[in-house]
Length: 170
Image 1: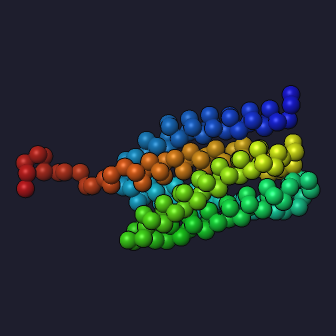
Image 2: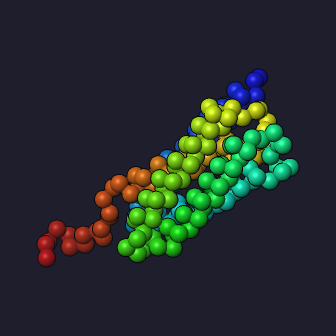
Image 3: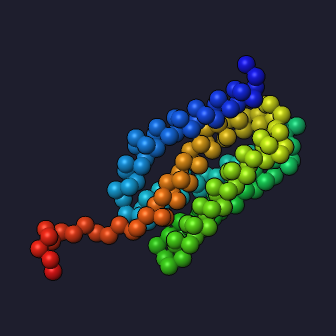
């Protein structure tokens, strides 16, 4: 089978697998939590985006990995990790929601740009990702799915404490 087709199949299965995990386990739990707590859990996952720096490590990726792909992918992910940490630090302050929006827009755009840059603009040679192959096939689908969850949490109204008056009024 063509290496590019195998790569595409791997990415597609990454989305299917993580989509199932998200629909079955992550979202049902997250939607019951207060918004800041749910956002905190998702932001914590994104603090691991420093792993994208692997695109700059010789021997992990092939020597023919184009710098035009490697540098933006690596530093874009690293920036996303820093923004996730920043958003976590200020999550419960008046800057929290703005910081999460900034992180989420940057982080999602970074992943979409890396896809565009690698597939369309640079046309990565098959095998050039080396051991970094696991990032776009396994990690990126999870990250994009959780970005969608963060957008959903940001766009829905804040949950308030349940009314415990039993409908009796004040």
